[in-house]
Length: 231
Image 1 (spheres, one colour):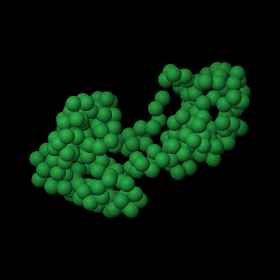
Image 2 (image 1 turned 90 degrees about the vertical axis):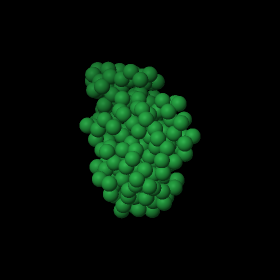
Image 3 (image 1 turned 135 degrees about the horizontal axis):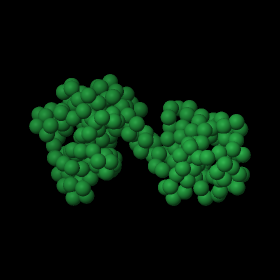
Image 4 (image 1 turned 60 degrees about the horizontal axis):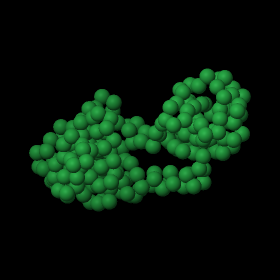
C-alpha cells in the first residue's frame, strides 16, 4: 500500500483525464510517469530537447514537446491553455517558475500545481495564482527524518498538520493478539484501516484477526496518538 503519492494526488480533480507537466527534471518525470501509469493522458514539456526526447523514449508521457514556457505564444501553440490541470515542475529556477505560473493562470487554466524550492518561492507562486504548491525536497527530508527516528513507520501521509495516516510494522507488543485485544481506539485513540503483508491488505480487518510481527497496519489518527504506539 503506497501512501507516499497521496499528498500530491489528493488535490487532483478526479474528473480530469488530461494533464500537462512543464519541466521534465526528476520531479516532473516522476509526475509524468505516475499519471501515465494511472491511465491519464499526459503532455510533458521542457526547454531542454534532450529531456523531452528521454521522456518519450522512456514512455513516461503520451506526448512531449520542447518549448520555452516563459513565452505565452509557445504555450498557446502547444495547447497548454486547453488543459484543465497544469503542473509547473520548474522548482529550481525561480524566475521561470513564477513567469510560467503567471502565464498559464492568466490564460485561464483552471487548476495549476506548482513546485516550490522554498517558503518564499511558494508564497510568490500563490500570489501569481498557483492553486496548490508542493515542496518535494522538504517533504523528502521530513520522510527521511521519520524513517531514521521511527523506522517502524513505513509510510506517512499527512492529512493536515495534526492528523495522519501511517503504515507501520506490527509492534512486538501486539504479536499474537487480536485486533480487539490491542484496543487501538480506546488505548491509543487510533482507528485501524487495514492489515496486510507484501502488498496484500485486508481492509477493515475482522476484530478477531490476530496480528503478527512482520505484518503491516495502516492506522489513522492524530500525530500525538500515533507517536504513542509502542514502536
